[in-house]
Length: 124
Image (tube, rainbow, N blue to C red; front, side, top):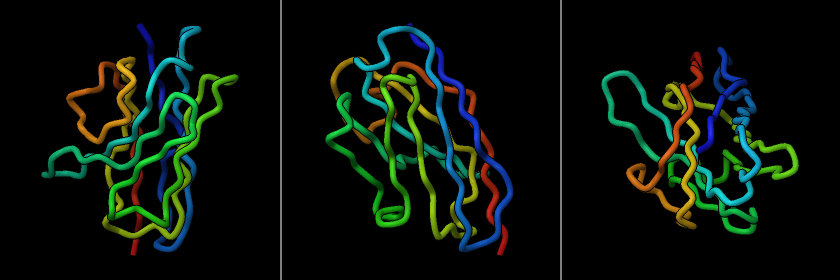
């Protein structure tokens, strides 16, 4: 089992940047595929980005491609989401998630563990 704790959210103006971190407990972090998802008020949770266990493969939602970058540091048991050129529509609670099935997937149902979320608010 793994526990996930997100940090780094906050209030930023449009065009600004934030870096989210997700720290994982346990010694098997490097076995987990990691993902970031977000949920805006009144909307369903949506996929943002995912990264394979080695970090060699990454996937992004079209809405964030070219602006967000997912990365991981297996030595630190941490996954990151660098968010640049933020837009008001990026406002949401951001969650990190993990699965140990080897699936670098956009499907939230394939992830077994979730963090508590961190709020990102982008003002116009």
